[in-house]
Amino acid sequence: MENHSLAQSLTMKRRSFLLGASGALGLALTKSAWAQTSGGAGGTLRVAITKPAGDLNPHKFAGLWAAQDLMFEPLMNYGPGGEILPCLASAWSVEDGGKTLKLTLRENVVFQDGTPFDASAVKWNFEQWIGLDSTNWMNSSRLYKSLEVVDDHHVTLHFSEPPLGLLQELTYIRPVRFLSPKSVAADGTYVAPVGTGPWKQTNASESGSVFERFDAYWGEKPGFATLELKVLPDSRNRMAALRAGDIDLIGGAYVSPLTATEAQTLKSAGVDVAIKPGTTTLVLGFNPDHVAALKDPLVRKAINVGIDRAAISQVLYRGYAEVAANLFATGVPMSGTRYDVPTIDPQAARDLLEKAGWTGDGIRTKDGVSLAMEIIVSEEQIPGSRSVAEVLQSELRDIGIDLSIRSVDHASRHSDIPARKYDLAFFLTYDAPYDPFGSVVGMFLSTYDNGVDGKLFMDADNLDPLVTAAMSASEADMQSSLQKVYDWLHDNAAIAPLLYVPSIWAHSTASRHESVESVRLLRTYGDHAARMDVSRRSGLRSRLSVEVQM
Image (tube, rainbow, N blue to C red):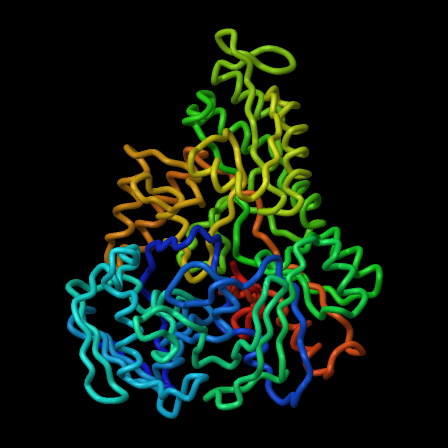
């Protein structure tokens, strides 16, 4: 039996398998920075976002993740290194070989409309999603058997089999968080976003959202009285607004993306900039189904050694990004044995292409066919990716590959990638708490539909069995099973990890803030936020999060 109380934390050992909800890359902040800020009496924090927060029903997959996280809380929080920490559940035990979860609910908690948070509210919320076909991608829902209300503060969940990653799934932003049972109409239709969290929404429109501090919140109360999320889709407008003092914070891959070049421009203008390492990986994906040459591992290996990762880091992140050879950074649990980062070697790349039968000066040919490929890029997905593609275009031409570039908007990418209408494309891993299994299952298992995210690589005969074995491995065999997946990807050059994406934020100076303390927090914690960085190299995120996920 596993137990956890406020004085004792349970380290998460079970994996999550994907889950892949709503096609978003990565997850939302687990605990907003503003919710953790203590001591301040008032003032307003203004944060730029790229689109309206939308429908914030925590049981649906429509709204802005981080806005939901401001208002709605889980039973447990996902802490640094995958540690599962108390939130609305103050204690729990996993019994009967993992088939029973007994929960002790935190007392003296109320929803923002005054409704008590108790066992009946927990039961009502679980009934909105658990056991439904729409959520059977979660083990907790797929294997759900029954829920028993013991008393006002104790609930027991029963499962037909031990759900792997059970506690980890209960930390997600949606659909597991808690909505007031009184925030729906008589027919059960959702009416308004009312949670137990530190912020309550007071206004929402296409131009932004306004939140006020919930003074009856059970935990640490926000240091600001008001939080404004302002919709500014254009990066130049966001930068101008920050410099003019109209907003306080921009940045984060999913809040209001800020490139390293833009960050340097702001820094030169006297704006405070924070750049922190992250655990999301930028990966070059190959599609052998669309271009026959990529079916040959030798061609993929040639591309791997024909790429200058340090140059890509310089172009995209001004050298702030760590170059990669592994699918995951070391901060991701069970990230595997570290491989040597390939050093650019054009001659070795040419030799590999020769061995594969691609010959000739200039653009190589084989059986009368030119070695030509196309890479699809979306500046909306990865700002600066067009420039990276141009670097690749030059490097691959040097070894005899004709690479063309097709720029698309975000919607077109979300259409073309799952339809596999590309030769090469950039991908981002999902990050905590979904990884490692989120990306491994979602991006490589051919039988799993992960929506608009698409597949990094598929091989039903060779790769699928390895992924499936890792999904069903025992705790003792889990890491070794995952290593077999990593080794296969590496040995077959199935993917080309490029770099680990840093978090970049810019914020207003102390003179523009209501308090010096708030600036210190933004400077220290401003980024990871959004992706729950479990990396020991980016400890900021484990303490608090600011990135707004979509």
